Image 1 (cartoon, rainbow, N blue to C red):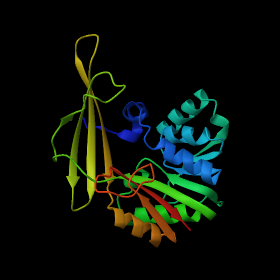
Image 2 (image 1 turned 30 degrees about the horizontal axis):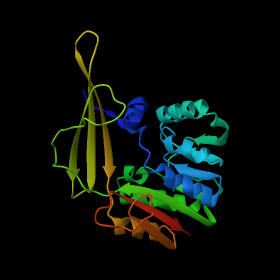
Image 3 (image 1 turned 135 degrees about the vertical axis):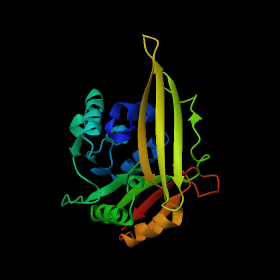
Image 4 (image 1 turned 45 degrees about the vertical axis):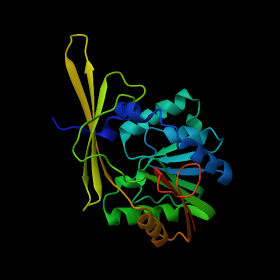
Length: 246
């Protein structure tokens, strides 16, 4: 049986990512600096959305996956934040809301789901069209360093999971893509091991490639950081965070 798409299995998505906190301070700080409303592209199940809403701003959360929107709505309702967030079922490549925002964000590697140049350019142009004068666009991608291709890695320290998690990746350096499969094995009450598997397809960026794409989309100034602390880019950076201005 082929693995499910990660974004169709919102519960598994949250099992993998709900405990991730590294980026929240970065996006909260931007919301506090620029004010709201904030447009979030690729809101997923609302992990960053909640952090933004807790700063007191309204959020327009764009997410094409019904499963993820449902999960996000439940998360916001539980946090008494649902009134601050408007969900939009739309594709970031063709988004046209007819309004602008002081801050537009595409967090947690959202741009890496765009696997062609045309898709990337369309999404960045749409993002630029929604940034108000004096506003900003922020995004992040991980630095492309990968383990040995096709080797299954056991993930013993992944927090919050009951069972054995392993990860497999295939990297295509020509297409600049990476396919990641997560496999979670759990022993049931009947003693049988059942596997739950999801797959994620991404296109990775190099730093200057994305800087040039942002400029080509109409952003006049681009700042690149070597992490969410807004420090300089170094050879040891694991994440590049970008802040672009009209």
